[in-house]
Image (cartoon, rainbow, N blue to C red; front, side, top):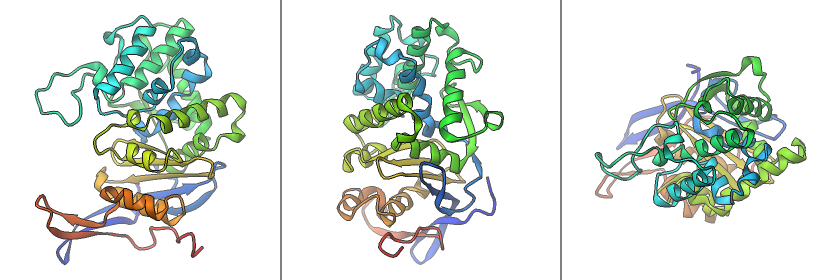
Amino acid sequence: MDESNPVLTRLWRGSDVESVHRGAVVIVDAEGSIIHAAGDPEQLVYPRSATKSFQALPLLESGAADAFALPPAAIALAIASHSGESIHTAVVGDVLRSLELDEDALRCGPQRPFHTPAGTPEHRIVNNCSGKHAGFLAVARHLGADTATYLDPASTVQQMVFEAVAEICSVDPAALETAVDGCSAPTFRMPLRSLATGIARVANPDALGDERAAACRRMTSAAAEHPALVAGTRHRLCTDLMTVTEGRLFAKIGAEAVYVVGAVGADRGVAVKVDDGADRGYNALLLEVLARVGLLDRSEAERLDSWGSTVRRNWDGLEIGRITFGDDVLPAAAHDA
């Protein structure tokens, strides 16, 4: 965390600032050149689930997805942080059956579905990362690797994942640190600019070579076809953003207030990290950034107002404050550039 990062958002209650959220925003093209930055674009962050499309590259490039005839829905689940609804667990279950494995093969911890009360039974297949793990298992099965150790950083699967992440983000492998994610898979520490570069390339893969470009297009196409599988049916920003833009924006949340967006065919990648980990610090900011650089039009922004509104209301619907953005944080509006 860079303590010199600017205030991204201020939350007002009445006429006073109640909370502030510092962090960084960076917009790049697919070569990694910075188009706009606020805060330190080189600060090291753990992108967490924002890297799932990078982690799914071996599933497609190894031939595993084709070997097991995985449909676009399964590809969407492989890059998902899903809500654990029946539409999600059904697809993950189908993948496991095609691998002749059961839920116990998943090494992600058990969770209960989002939007359910405490005490609801927890299952591994409900874990928001179960689709990613099913993808890892497919790679292991296809290559004849040990499925029991597919999360070991030294395993064939995770070595392939590590190489794919380093390559697509243009990070020196010797500098790419790892730790353990919430789902027990390896997670990575990289500059925020590198994260934005990776998502820009997934959305704009023409320069990556035929095999990788095809893999990236399959992922963005699957997400556009099945946005509810990438997140969920109930108030999930990834799903709503991809639905409203019909897949033109490829969006992915990461834990601790990381968010990335790749603009398909528009040569742009956006990455946001709020230093205190509060997601309320980036929703309105992210949509304003996308609108200002011409990646989100007015009608689309209006349809996403539940996420982008800067008006704060209480449970009874009363207006109690507002959200404002920090000085010099937002890019110049496209028509002003």
